[in-house]
Length: 74
Image 1 (cartoon, rainbow, N blue to C red):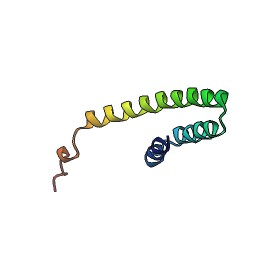
Image 2 (tube, one colour; image 1 turned 90 degrees about the horizontal axis):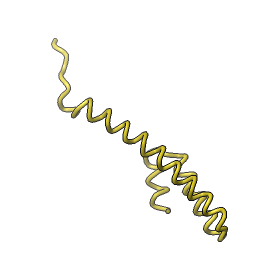
Image 3 (cartoon, rainbow, N blue to C red; image 1 turned 120 degrees about the horizontal axis):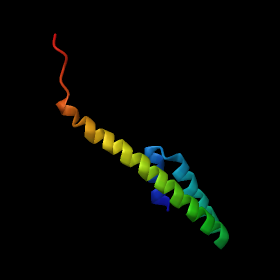
């Protein structure tokens, strides 16, 4: 969970990072109910993040490689 939290932090996925922390805290407190609730929230946030990232990468594929850009004529 710590690695996932760190990865989320590095790409700016703060809601996902916060749910990772909540899940870890609930598990540390041995709260089965809290863990299950946090896990469900984590799954929802993951689905939202995945959809956003898929849209982002689709746009990048449409734009094409950065090297294909042309310079304006002088």
